[in-house]
Length: 112
Length: 112
Image (tube, rainbow over all chains, first blue to last red; front, side, top):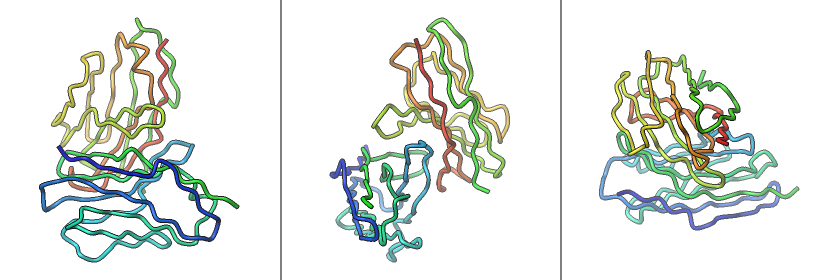
């Protein structure tokens, strides 16, 4: 079974600073997708960024970027210029076909 | 438009009640999902519908009964639930089962 591990239960960052959230996963597959989702206290899961495993280039969405290391099975999320609205629970997720697995989550606090 | 809607937002029910959760999307997505999320935990996949047919049932108790009347609607019928079934129930949809999932805001269920 594929597992997703987020080793940081909580992280905090000063507003306007940069923070990196870690994620590792275990799979024997070569084709799959990786995602970072954000879940604010309002509870809706919001897609932050997506990475296809066959793409070597790291995905970027505005202030959010990933460091995808396929051989190491690592998929970290970097948030630049952190904003108060970035405060949320962040989930790393692995997907292949119908199977979607989430990590335990990292709660990010942004300090003004 | 990446909107998935869920009703009701909150639901309180007794263990002998029958209730239904509803999920709707108008993005033309052909795959829809139900997840259960306990507090401070990641979502757990319950059911997957692909082209209106149930493709995954993650060993969910029979007191949860999914239904997909058409490609835009997904229901979750609840009967004889237990207090431990209290959770946030999230619906999601994707273009195909391989694609990015978009989540609804969830239904907060409390079983008394």
